[in-house]
Image 1 (cartoon, rainbow, N blue to C red):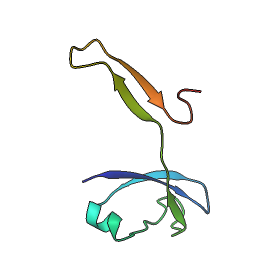
Image 2: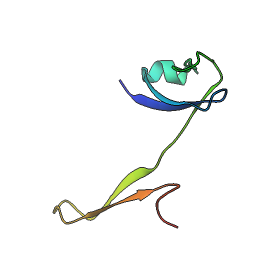
Image 3: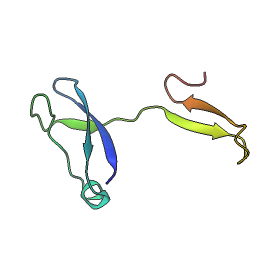
Image 4: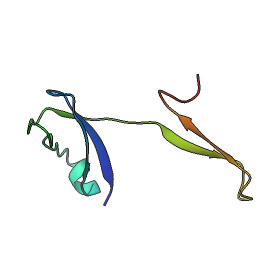
Length: 69
C-alpha cells in the first residue's frame, strides 16, 4: 500500500499515512496524528533522480526545495 506525506494545517505537524490508491483517488482526508484535526494537506518532498544507465556508475541527486538551484 502506498505511503503519503501530509501536514496538518492546524498544528503544522508532518505525518505519513498508508492508504490504498482507491481511497486516495476518492479524496480521503486523514486526521492529524498529533491533534486529530481533519484540516490536513498532502505535502511533497524532494525526489531522488538517478543519472546514468544501468552500469552502476550513475550519480544520484535530489530535486526539490533543497536540490538544484
